[in-house]
Amino acid sequence: MNYRQVFRGLVLLGSALALVSCHQGAASAKPEAGYHGRKSAESTGRGPTAVLSTKAVFRDLTTYREVAGSVEPVVQSPVAPQISGVVAKVYHLAGDYVRQGEPVYKIDDSQLLLTLKTAETALANAKLNYDITKSNNDQNGPKLKLQVQSAQASVDVAEKGYEASKQLYAIGGASSSDVATAQAQLQTAQANLEAAKIALSQYKDADQQTLAQLKLAIQTAEVQVEQAKLNLSYTVVRAPYSGQLTVVNVNPGQYVTPASQSFTMVGPEKQIGFNVVPSDAISLTMGRPAMFTVAGVAYPLTISSFPGAPVNGLLPMTARPKEPIRVPFGVVGTVRYEVVVAKGAVVPVSALQSDGSVSYVFTVADNKSVKTPITVLGEAGTLAAVSGIADQTVVIDSPPPGLLPGAPIRLMSDQESNQGGQL
Figure 1: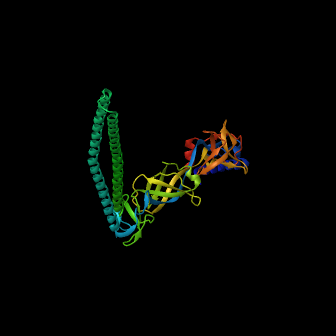
Figure 2 (figure 1 turned 60 degrees about the vertical axis):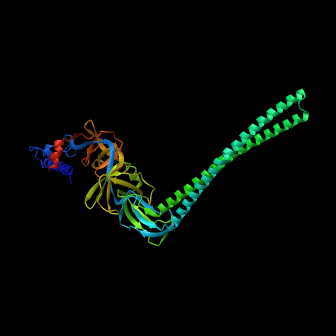
């Protein structure tokens, strides 16, 4: 029983004693007073009824929920090899801590070493073919240029001989056959020059195409060498980051492929995983605070993920600790978080009344009680959020039994409320 109920009981008791005194005919006696000398309006009909009051505050009504949560790694990775092969050596087992880039196991590399040597030989051969072809072209080019120059000189001589023959023929110093012979020699020289030029042009085109093909062959061989080196490096399977190995599924002599999961590891960072009902997830936005308690130690949290897809009607969520959690992975504790139950005018649950079909509260207007219908939007502990009254509305808390609408009332002061609580 709280102090307010005690106070109401005292007021009613005083009223009853006053009535008994009146019926006994003690007319000269002073009427029995209630608490602090006041009489209840219901019992005597004299003076206003003293009531407790509060002001409704329009705000979010919140409460706290508690669910189970477990310590989980922020990063967890199944690792598979890049190439297929037989495991030659295992360096670490499950439970070991490894640094980023540290070898976990090695695949036999004998076949890949041969592949690398073959690729390196092919590269050397491609470079040799290029060098030989280029050297031959370097020698043939000047020869063809000399042939063009020689053919050009022959054309020059033939042109002069032909002109001279025509001049001699004009003065009777040469016959027409001499002119025809000189003309034929000029045409032959011109044909030889054209052939030499074509040969030189074809050589240049062929030289460029051949060298381009040989360069491409070198590039292809270089790629094959790099690929062989890369495959050889894949024989050592390393940790992708620093952390702990939780599962190692390989043994010496075992054949592994890129489709097989060889080991699993987790990072050092921890988070708390937990599940909530969909209605709570609305309040758990990114960055909202929460609390994780395990073994009597409370760790502040910050919501770090949006709700995932529901699983069996619950939404999985995660929260990051604001300070290091010094407990192992998998430990289960309690996650405590705040959710909004409803938004409305917040009043004490003790102020709520019902006549069976309608919920209402007593508000105050002109020092009289007013029956005001409301709708209860939600409850949390000793408080309720309602609609139907405005912010800062004065509401009677724990109304006295039998209080009627329109009854004169007097709001108790804080001092009187505190005195009632001391009884």
